[in-house]
Length: 591
Image 1 (cartoon, rainbow, N blue to C red):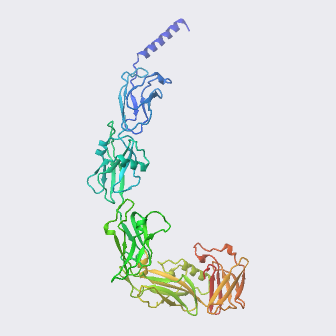
Image 2 (cartoon, one colour):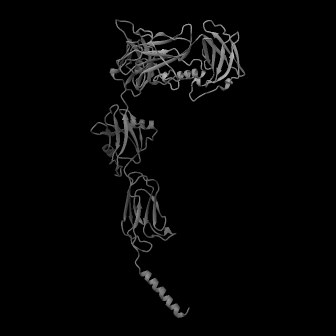
Image 3 (cartoon, rainbow, N blue to C red):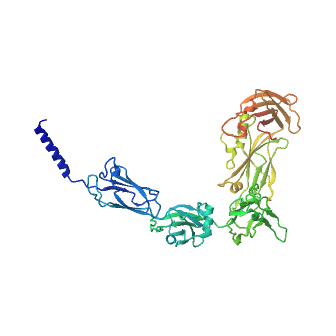
């Protein structure tokens, strides 16, 4: 390069530098500052400038950009050329106000002034509730409330702005601060520190009504000693426990009837009572003309329970029908909070009704000797003139019977399974897939007494009989929703008793007569699988015994179908002689 060229180039560079020096610096501002306003649990604040404020990589070269007015201490640093961060030594408690003001002579790295907002402030707000007791929503009538705050609050602001609002009352209830030994006892029960100035215990200036719904309001305006006050209300919902009452419960035919005398009475309390006093409660029969009165002692619902307090007692049935009683409660009975029952509940009246309607077979299925084919059934209060107490429902029962299944194993098993699964709200004769032609039966007349009367339903001829009783009275008393109630039973009429000894390798079937217990020779024996298919056949010898082979191992009992009754498993044994058919099932283990 020539000397002239070097002079020209130097002059150009000098001019560029001069122009750069003469250009005005770009004005800067604080793009963001956070947090501002009211904030809880603040540990760090940061400011972001629009222009570089310190050399990149050397953030320690500049002084703090803000003058800080805050009682809490901390340390500042530059996170990068534009971001300034101040970290407090600990999370800020409530009741603090901090102000950050830009230094008057603050300049950017390029020397420009700072425009825009220069003052930034935050507050940690007034004292807020961090934890409260009781933890349950159900409270006592004179409940006290323990509150753990995030900063101590002044007495004056608490009593001015904390209130209890009770549903149905137009005005709130003011509170007072509990102090001294009462406060210490409450905090000790909660395992809270007695000396913590952030804990305050409050109580309303009047008792609450039992069952009332209320809210404790920690209102706006409650302040710390520094004068920083809450801006928003905190609300805690509660419900006062119900009054201390006793309630008698018993089973009834319907809501208008008296108690069923065959079922126990139960006495419950709305809150627990001491057993040593409750054990003196008695049920006494009300008599006339000086007749001696019978009494029943109360007992625990669970005799093995050793808790000193109980809330539930029972009196064991049976009781006399159509009788009146009183439950006598001793005067010293108090609940676990020392509340006494209302004087009107010192005695509780109760009465029993007649015995309830009844139609009951002795079993769902049984074998009936053909010499006297009667099916016993117990009946009570369902005759032609019977009336259901309190509801005015009258009407006699109806009965139907059908001779079904003949000697076909599959049909016999289907009917036995239908009996096992029968429901009280549907007729067994409506079971899908089972053919029958039931005939109407006339039940023997019964007396209108309180005792159940057993009558015999005649069965015509040998075979499997299905008998069903239908009663609107029973359904109204016992079904929900009310409707006709059906009670069904099966009876196999025969003079043959069939027995099976089921073995792993071989089995024995022996047949005897029911009327004379004599062996039956020449009986045709069939053993059917649970689906009705025949597994084996044999004939009894002179001793009434037939040897059978080829049966499944009893250790792996067969199962047929999806329903679970005794007749969807096991084996059915049939023994047939002229005019007689006997059956046995491997599930019959109790006679």
